[in-house]
Amino acid sequence: MSKKQFFIPALLLLICPPLHAQHWNNPSEKYKDAYKKYSNATCPIPQDSIRHFVYFSRDRASIVNHPLLFSSRFRGAQIMYSWKELEPEKGQFNFSPIRKDIAYLSTYGKRLFIQLQDVTFDKRYKAVPDYLLTGEYDGGAVFQYNDDGEPEGWTAKRWNKKVQERFAILLKALGDEFDKKIEGINLQETAIGVNSKTDASFTEATYLQGIKNNMLAAKKAFPNATTMLYANFIPGEWLPFDDKGYLKSIYEYGEKIGVGLGGPDLMVTRKGQLNHALAQMHEGKFTAPLGIAVQDGNYISKTGADKDYEENKDSGLKGRKNLVPMLHAFARDFLKVNYIFWVNQEPYFEEDVIPCLSNE
Image 1 (spheres, rainbow, N blue to C red):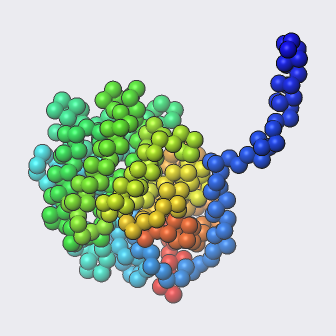
Image 2: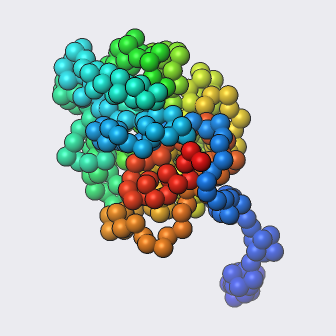
């Protein structure tokens, strides 16, 4: 066959692709319209079995006289405590903030859900104790980078065995004191901006194993309280096309050992979230509890990583549609969660969440 004869059918293939290609279903869009089934949900939201918590991040002071204290729909507060705050010196623990929060919440019949921080999204702040930042722990923490290659915060070296050992010691100390006094404890999200190019000690395999080691340490430390991991993305994998089984193995392991699973950011229209944590929750069968966080920006379909987030986050977006009933229905029926953590972000919490989860 001459080059000319070969070129013509090749050109026809470009102009007229095979029939099966014309009807190809993009697997990354499998759940892109799933939220529409719940778009007509309304307020007030009927009573259900979901345990609703209000997420305060590190703003502990805001729990004082907060509306959650006077509403039967909210079980309690989720508060973040940094590793550095809880272990300021090696082996020396300071749990007084947790004790105070438990005592205050309990006077209103409310419970505490601890979020244990070892990662930050602010390059000015490390969440790990200073003693970890030494050669004994290979520096203990490293920068994590955003998609533009800019440092956006710090992460503990979760893949380092000695760091894992210290984290397990912290978890045991927490469990010894609070296991039967709190609702639960969750470890931060698995998504970090680190790879072998940004840190030579990092490998995907050791990171995955490190996450599982931390999960098991949490479960051993808290046999009675709910334990949970925010498993959203794993470095080196992007679903559904680059599936190395990393995230799936985390969900399978959590179910095996009884550690709950979930993620931050209930983003029902974003393929990233839909194809990772949300897909795992929807497709799996779990006896371990599932949880989802509605975090900063989610009330207006944004996340803190969005470049236009800062200009919109506090505006209230007058005339906006209240997304809370749709988010709740999606979480309840599509994800079948046991917990929802509603971020205390104004004006959205007061204007959108409270009316939907009223006592009426």
